[in-house]
Length: 380
Image (cartoon, rainbow, N blue to C red):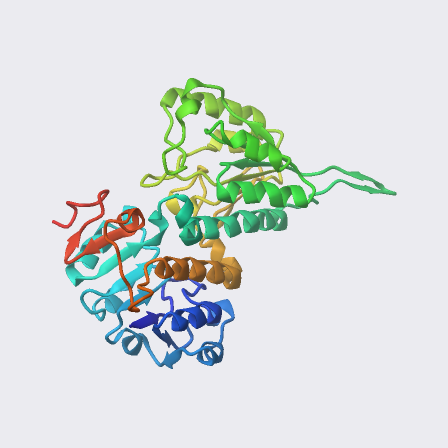
């Protein structure tokens, strides 16, 4: 089977969906791997490194896609690429279906099998395939470094002959994968860290990393987590209490990092303009949810906004792409692990079980129709 890996054409995307390490393993599984020339440059993987492990380098996307059975990408195919993918081919990538209804229709019209890896069920055997976890972990780490770079003071307490430098105070909103890594990183840098989440179960994880857990006590928090491990959207009454708590807490903070996302919905607004106005000059906010609408009122994707009272709001785009080599390695391993789980060991080739909960969780389109239960009916 031919497996194609394309150069990413989305603006600012530096990652690649296969590395020399995963290509070596894919060829061992029996795939003929074809890499578009230059696909790995943004992640520091040269064409020659792919060739050394058995890949074929081709000049352009057309040659890579020609009769390809499987296509690996980071982001969705462009319209031009989509028109060159043969019917029945499997496109495996991050496809953002909740925000791209037209893309869903296009995949169905093209007759491809589109697999949205970010919809991977949060079950034990799928952990090694979960791109959200692997990429969010890096985002949480990098968010603290970005904040430290923007912050005009040090993170740890420093006792010098000229006096003592107080440690930075960091508050993390959301204790998922990104939030927990942000807490751990901020603690390693010497900050005093607190965190908030609507899920009471997150308290133990936050405290195990040395953070102080802050939350609104409510009966709602007992059922604030979906079966997939994500936070649910809370009631207006809860949101009002949460806003009051945030207002009291933020005035004491130097840095805030927001990570809250709700699948299928715009990111919830956690920090308002009024909250920002109460923060100290020189404070920094990093909004990791900015590409999904943002947790911070006034954040702008791809820009740093400095408010009238001297607070810097950072709206990073593609945070994992700022650690392109590691992000690519983890993403590529997620894809490899997914394919490996559906190989026919006796006869070779893929043996997709379309009733498997992993497949039903991520397969968007098949045989010209939208088949995912969350989107079926949207092909008209």
